[in-house]
Image 1: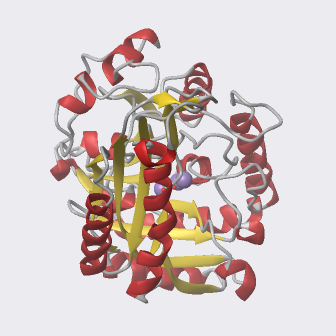
Image 2 (image 1 turned 180 degrees about the vertical axis):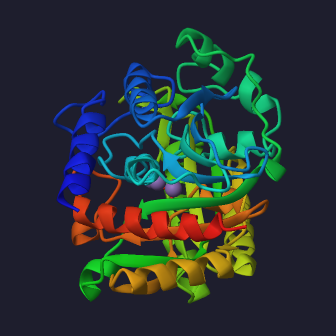
Length: 408
Ligand code: HGY
Ligand code: MN
Ligand code: MN
Ligand code: MN
């Protein structure tokens, strides 16, 4: 196990060096120079482990180990390798590394799986560069429209296609993959919460992933002079936005089911200290384990926004992402449980409050997820840390599970 754990620690150290904010966490935006560094490392490791490497039309990376039945659908195992701004070293890469090391175990044991095995490293799961998130998996499964690539822009006005071309990636490659070529999708991910650590359990077998939506709210007012405009004659976009944002947590609490609402991004124009803001754009990330409550949260947010339209203020709400809650595949969950027990690894069922690429694959194939503990429950911050020994445990469980999955 030590050797496996050591390799995992080396991968983590290598990939976490590819950040635009050294010393302040991981910032690895899609198609950035840091993406390209991580991409080269991942592809080199795939080659080192004897995998056939390819990329698709949005830059997802695949490392394929042929099965004895080459035309059979493949078992995909991996995660994403982009990050949030100033995030951690494990959110995403832990799953990609697990995929690499599962493939290494097949090679080391000179076992050729029946179904081909594909290690997958996906782009833009976080949506930190191009709004919405889950872009790599949604593009692959054909659920993104063309506008996402030709019109949606990052904060510098660059579209996905332009960013790929600037990064030297081949935009002519096929984006969409026929889901009939996929037997299953397995993802190891850090829990990003406190439950496993508090329970002292190294492995969580995910049962379901929360439903979520991401909205972008634009508040339009009237710019003016901060000194000469009387208080009763202002259409201050920032005051109106602040009123909406301050009321959002109450909407989540009212559902009573642990729903959550977050405003993570906000921009103010024109941004002068002595100018009344005329425009504010901010995000609303809302989640619930129950789809009807995701709908309620959206409706209540839209009603709240509409109620602020007075005195020269107008408000528009744009939905950028909507995902229903997703259940993981029961057969795969029972295999993960069975193999954990055979390996003597303590495990427990757990639900995911974070969104994952697995929720996209869940509509087209059998999906399974494992979680490992996050120290102090922290994630999406430089303090994020998980134990390579737990990643090694997940690798062994996936290895045994995939072997069972590939028995015809
Ligand atoms: O937002 C999420 O839940 C994930 O980290 N993209
Ligand atoms: Mn993630
Ligand atoms: Mn994340
Ligand atoms: Mn995720």
